[in-house]
Image (spheres, helix red, strand yellow):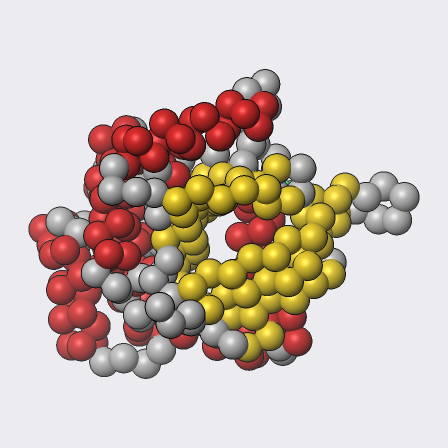
Amino acid sequence: MNKNPVVQIKNLVKDYGTKGFQTKVLKGIDFTIEKDDFIAVMGPSGSGKTTLLNILSTIDQPTMGTVFVDGQEVTRMSNRELSKLRRDKIGFIFQDYNLLDTMTLQDNIALPLSLGGVSGRECVERVEKLARRFGLEEHLKKYPYQLSGGQKQRGATCRALITGPEIIFADEPTGALDSKAGRELLECLRGVNENGQATILMVTHDPFCASYARDVYMLCDGRMICRISRGADRKEFYDRIIDMQTSMGGELSWG
Ligand SMILES: Nc1ncnc2c1ncn2[C@@H]1O[C@H](COP(=O)(O)OP(=O)(O)O)[C@@H](O)[C@H]1O
Ligand SMILES: [Mg+2]
C-alpha cells in the first residue's frame, strides 16, 4: 500500500508555565497520520489530548519538535501561511459545536466556502448535497437554537467537510451528546471515512467513541504508549480498548 502522510510529528514536546514551575504535558511524541486513516487518541482527563490536537491543527505551538501538515513544516510558517493552511486543508469539530447563533444552519455550513469566495449558488448546492447525507436537509433554514445537540454536531461536521479538507480534527466530538446522537454522529464519521472522503483524527476519553476509529492510540504520562487496530467487529474492538484501558490503570480519571 502507498504511504501518504497527511500529518507527521517528530519528537513533539509541550511544556506549560515558566522556568521552575513547568508542567511537562507532552514528552516526546512521534506520530504519523496517513491519508484515509481514522485514528482515535485516547487518554485520561488531563493527559494532553486537547493540547496535542491544538498543536497538530496549528492552533497552538510546540515547545520542541516538528509538525508537518501535507508535507509543509507548520512550525516554520508565518501566521498568514498558517491561516491559509487552516482554511484550505483542515476541518475542525469541537465538543460544543461552535456554530454561530446568528446564522442559519445553511449559512453556518457554507461559512468556510463564503469566506473562500465561492459564489452563493454554488454554496447552496454543495451544502444541500452534504446535508442530505447527514440527514439535515430539512433543517437548513433553522438557527442553532432550534436544533438538537445531535443535529448541531452533524451540522458542525458538514461545516468541517465542506471545503474537502486533507484532514478533520475532532476534540471529544460526542462529549456533549446523548448516546443515541453520539452513535449517529460516529456512524456519519465512519461513513465519510470509509467512502474515502475524510482522514480523521479524533481525541476522546470515551472507549465507545474510540471504538468507531480504525486505530486507537493511548496517550499516557505525556507519551503515546500503544496502538491497537480494529478488525471487522466494533464490539470486539470496544472490549479490547477496555482491556487496554484497565491494564493502563483503572484508577486514572477517565471522565
Ligand atoms: N494554557 C494552559 N496553561 C497551563 N496549563 C495548561 C494549559 N492548557 C492545558 N494545561 C494543562 O495541561 C494538561 C493537559 O491538558 P489538556 O490537553 O486539556 O488535557 P485533556 O484534553 O487530555 O484533558 C493539564 O494538566 C492542563 O491543566
Ligand atoms: Mg480535552
